Amino acid sequence: MPDLPAVPEWLNKGDNAWQLTAATFVGIQSMPGLVVLYGSIVKKKWAVNSAFMALYAYASTLIVWVLLAFRMAFGDRLLPFWGKAGPALTGDFLVARASFPATAHYGAGGALEVPPTQPYYPEATLVLFQFQLAAITLVLLAGALLGRMNIKAWMAFTPLWLLLSYTVCAFSLWGGGFLYHWGVIDYSGGYVIHVSSGVAGFTAAYWVGPRLKSDRERFAPNNILLMIAGGGLLWLGWAGFNGGAPYAPNIIASIAVLNTNVSAAASLLTWTCLDVVFFGKPSVIGAVQGMMTGLVCITAGAGLVHTWAAVLMGICAGSVPWFTMMVLHKRSSLLQKVDDTLAVFHTHAVAGLLGGVLTGLLATPELTTLHTHVPGTRGAFYGGGIQQVGKQLAAALFVVAWNVVVTTGIILAVGLVIPLRMPDEQLRIGDDAAHGEEAYALWGDGERFDVSRRAAARATEVGDQSVDQRLAAMGARGITVQL
Image (cartoon, rainbow, N blue to C red; front, side, top):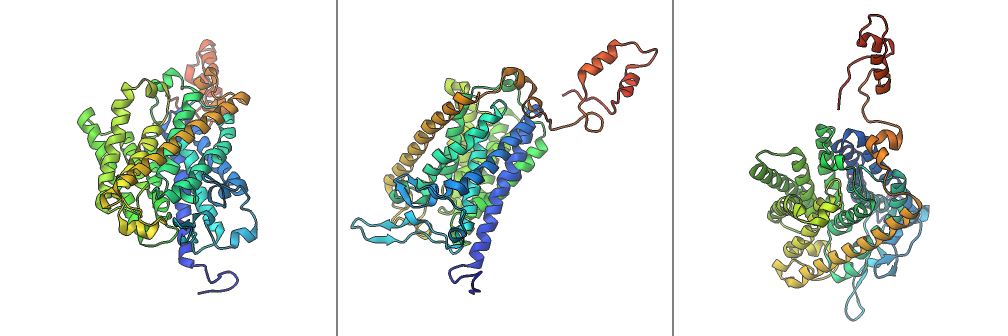
């Protein structure tokens, strides 16, 4: 019921509460989900740097988002693929009813067929939810660059990529751009988020260069249990990711959350079974990757397909990216040359493209009618014909091409001012060289043990004292663990 002025007549308290909750779920995927995942899935010497890259991307995205980027992605139309830039900072703008002004759809004769989308909550809620999706895109992109990118170059890269790449894809597919009005289906970011982050990460990794040879050959996680915890936060947080896409807690949201979990489980099991069949044992890292590909694949059509189709999409997500990572990667000189640290290309670009194509086949008319705003949109198996699959492929091509070109331009421009890759001598050290900090203090009461002091102690004769006694006199306590 209205309770003016705090609750105007157009505001639905339930819709607003769910959208804020969904935004929080998506935020938890990045903070702490991917921060924990990145900090634990890498070598010990890169734990701090990897976690900080995710943390910085999240924070910098929010400031740029409210200053300019939100309205470039969801504001008034400037170009067929871009909205007009502007701030989302004033009270008048943020307390007004949320709206996507460019989503009004007109028929062939110019008559208005579908009015612009207007959720039943204030613009501030929409700004927050869409920020979380934008932030996680950059955090995912970072996964391709861990273990060697100069942190200062990353700090310059993130706001530029958000403004020049993410906003274009978001407006084109969600905000009322040419792909939106053409009828391309991207329910919650299979293309906008996952294909974009996968392709941009792979492109940036090409230009930044590889890690040290020793790191590429062995890059074992420093804490697998924390890696699983981070992956679990990512999985559960996806309920907000796909459940928030309809902008209301409606039937589509319920279907989407169920399908998201089903696809993730099916993909994880498929990936694990393939590991057992071909390698003789299940890999925990592989299971997390399988979970990820299942979540990514279903994102393009989570609320628009039947649950049996979600099982099928999960099986495909656990097998096709597995094949590209385990088989195709070893046969491709380009894939081997580019050092994509966490295989973001396979887990996001390949899985996202796969999900977009499968959505073009499996999207049901009953569900698309409730969600999409272009009349007649449906999968090929339900009367959409090969035309819908063609639209999905064309949209993927646009996203891939835009990200390759724009990411290349940004990374080369940043490289003119700031070295993109850390020097080899710093790469051999890791976090201490990049930040002056380390993730784990394994000596005494938090002090790092100075190896040079130990060597000096061994080389110096002090009466009949043992080495351990002399080390104790220097203040060292506890045990030394060789990592």
